[in-house]
Image (cartoon, rainbow over all chains, first blue to last red; front, top):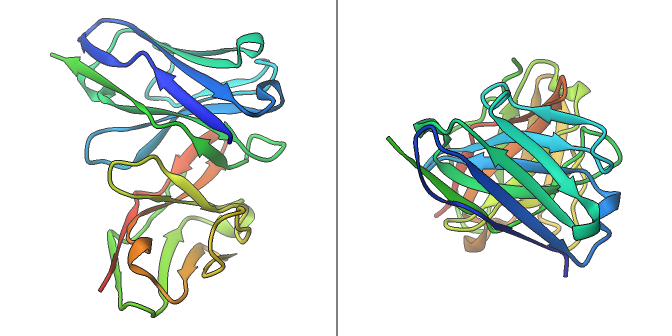
Length: 121
Length: 106
């Protein structure tokens, strides 16, 4: 069964940093684009970042540009999100999601179970 | 920036048809994907590229996309279909989600 497992969340003071990880299994990780999506408590989904299969193309939401860095290690079948200069509004469950289709306009499937990041002010 | 508009809530009687809309400027020119999220769970893809159902998704889920509105249709709605539904597109290399619709099966 295709699986994504996030880790690295926690309680962090405002201005702090975290590195989230997403470990993939049961599919050829290097063949797929990947994304990070977050969901603030009681709110909707917000796309955060995209990375192509070879890391050659990367996109960010305006709300995180300059503070977040997406990366991947295909040999380790892992996706990462380095989060710096954390703000209260970054408090959310962070999901990794595999990209579907052959272009950046693809869908998100499957999703990991998420990891909670809480920023204390 | 591109915006997607969904109704906050939709109610449907058990066994009847629910329709959840997703409005956006000329959305017909984009691929629309739909996700279902139940409380405390990660989202699950139910429709991709407007009309396609992933394996394992019941046939009662279908989608359409025309003009400025995409629609997710759930025929013969079941109690287990309750949850939040999100439409999603890409615009200018940015992922965009609708605000979400809470579906209640009465």
